[in-house]
Amino acid sequence: MIVAERKPFEEIKDMLKGYKKVLNVGCGTCVAVCLTGGEKEVDVLNAELDMARKLDEDPIELGAVTVERQCDREYLETLDDKVGDYEALLSMACGAGIQFLAERYPDMPVLPAVDTTFIGVNQDVGWYEERCRSCSACVLAWTGGICPVTMCAKGLYNGPCGGTDQGKCEISQEQPCAWFEIYGRLAGQDRLDLIKRFYAIVPWKNQKPRTLIQPGYKKPEQAE
Amino acid sequence: MKSGSNLEKVLEAGHFAFTGELGPPRDTDGEEVRHKCSYLKGNVDAVNITDNQTAVVRLASWAACLILIQEGLEPNFQMVCRDRNRLAMQADILGAYYHGVRNMLCLSGDHCMFGDHPDAMGVFDIDSIQLINMVKTMRDESKLQGGQEMEHPPKMFIGAAINPFAEPFDWRVHRLAKKIEAGVDFIQTQCIYNMDRFRTFIQQANDMGLTEKAYILAGVTPMKNVGMARYMQKKVPGIEVPEELIDRLKGVDKKKVADEGIKIACEQVEEFKEMKGVHGVHMMAIEWEHMVPRIAEEAKVLPRPVVD
Image 1 (spheres, rainbow over the protein chains, first blue to last red):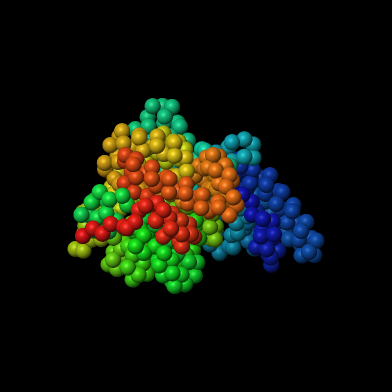
Image 2 (cartoon, rainbow over the protein chains, first blue to last red):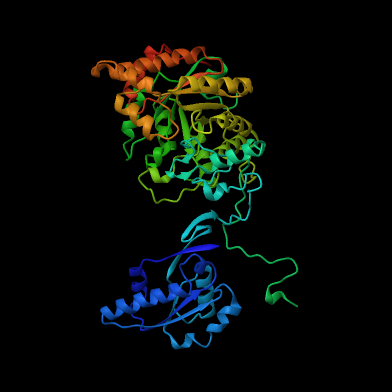
């Protein structure tokens, strides 16, 4: 899932300066699962903002709505008859959702309440870890299911580097060396040959905005 | 001859190579580089010029290389993958070559978080082994990485580092094999203190025939004092300092610790001269350049050979 982290309260409060009526839009998918931007978090943030603005003697009227997914037109549609009542929209979705919301209501200021952090896994309740940088060229087949692009601090394709310190990365004793782990896993599977070969320079595929159109589908303007 | 560099000639002629190292200043003080050169000239075959070592901004490696050439020394241009993408790397290689640089050392580079700009973006467009291969393709196929042909390619003698002590230990010789497959000509190792482990490593490399495919220069850094030894042991990832070495430094009179450090380094050089698969020593006298004449003298590596 996509993991996001709520922005510091002061930063959000600062963004909302001057607005008297704002709709806070949550997202019911990834950011709800990681306890950052779902229905509950929308209510909590609104309560905090409400209190802070009252203390500042500058009250704000806050609406709350959480859609299933802000990255999907069919769910955004449900907001069409609501947004007109507000001066600005605050979004608690990931960066993709925030932009899709802004794209649907181009005349409306749309403000981010979260920082989108990574594509990650749910280690435990409230504990998430990054696992994928969406490089568009997955190498997990020959790296024992451990991503060197994401999990190695230098993104090395021919690791490990000389900074491995008893299985830990040179950046921190808390951070396992990805290549140490790749080596260990492949050794256990008797597949070390996979990383003994030289892996050539990568043609990066993530250096411009990416689009995917599945076979058999077309962009609407191309549809017959 | 691949490059015709002095280092290549010395190694090709079968001499035991002796290289030094110089870290550029953290400002525009090129005179400091010239001053350090005065200690190295005539005592080493080539001098590594570090590239923003430990992720700290310093006078550019290529620029310091030019100072060395002006001073009549041969530089070994270090290049890390942390600070530049493939375009900038190739541009610097072309420019450095035009100005007379003939040796290169291809490195990953320490992570930005260690240095004076810990929030900088680490580039790592390519990794150190891919860099070796890129420089080899430029030299042997006269092609830039993007495929463009060159009429005047840079003919570099291509070096890389190896750390025989980092985990997983069994992997390290395979990493050496990968660097050789990618096209490396010579290797300079991380500072060696655990001689037992290095002997095992070089034996593995000999058994795999790797020491016949690339020249191996053993890395030596003399200990200045007990504090330095302790720091290297505890704080520098991938360096192994045996307790016996620290005991030996502690065992001498406080005023003689530096002498003992040099003595230990010279004993290492003596062993490396006899060790099958080792073709020279890379002497990293870190911020101790003025000691290099004495170290070279006591290690009995003078005079340096002159090969036409």
